[in-house]
Amino acid sequence: MAMRTCQKIKTTVNVLGKFSLRDFSGVKNLKMSKWQEEKDKFLGMSLENKRELYKSYTQLKDIPTWQEYAKKESLAKKIAAKLDFTMDDSLNETLREKISLFQGDITKLEVDAIVNAANSSLMGGGGVDGAIHRAAGPLLLEECKSLRGCETGDAKISGGYKLPAKYVIHTVGPRGEKPGLLQNCYKNSLKIMLDKKLKSIAFPCISTGIYGYPIEPAAHVAISEVRKHLESHADEVERVIFCVFLPEDERVYEGALQSYFPVK
Ligand code: APR
View 1 (cartoon, rainbow, N blue to C red):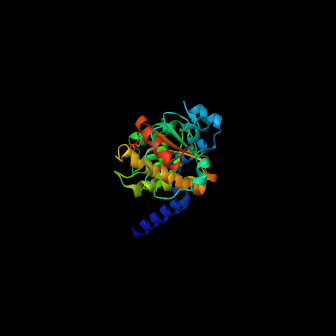
View 2: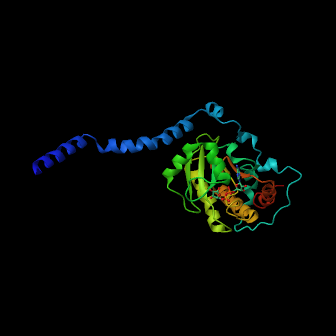
View 3: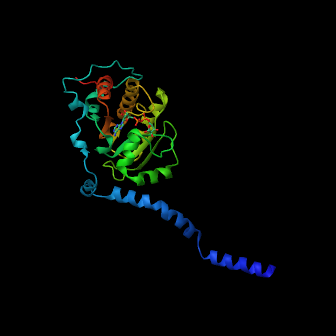
């Protein structure tokens, strides 16, 4: 009896021995590579082919810089800045061309990366998170599953898939007014932009929707972090777009932007 069992085990080992470890992990990777193949396909696509995929989009060249935007007579009155750093005013002229205030749907922006105001699971949600996942398609969620969540204040990058944007940078804002954590969302998203040598990025008003961060203090955190970043990396950036969704948020940003990117 024992002999027969040993023989059985030996045969089984022999059969299994023929499959290298690679084959088994290959089966697992086969499933994961679906999103990877699609991601590489979208990232390698020519602009004209990609444009056939998405219905409507806004090209970067059609988004006025803050310098151009600020010529509007009805600019909101300047909101007193709570500046926590001294600005290098000699850079103002250059930096006004590096930013934009855009009111509309971030999923339409044809830029290198749009930032998603996600939750720590990265499994999608409502608000801008829901809009981005809907526009990108189901493979975005597949890739997000491989990112294994995201801490509040941290940021992770994925492909953009069917979005006009090449990439999505997912960041998790704080619930309520916690400036240190919100600063980290902008800092870490801008760091990924730098590391990946991306030239254009659009931010929604992180944490100011479902997470309830009051828009004005959040705007000061967002804009001052971008100012700090541009003071050291202006020549590596083509454009940072503050993408507001609500008209009242546009008014707040108009006022706050004049404190950090003063216009004549
Ligand atoms: N384009 C640009 N901005 C948008 C869009 C859009 N399509 N949709 C919503 N917004 C704006 C909202 O008006 C708000 O100003 O994005 C900002 C952030 O709001 P939320 O999306 O509610 O994000 P947040 O407050 O950070 O809460 C995050 O909400 O969607 C869930 O999964 C997400 O649990 C997380 C939480």
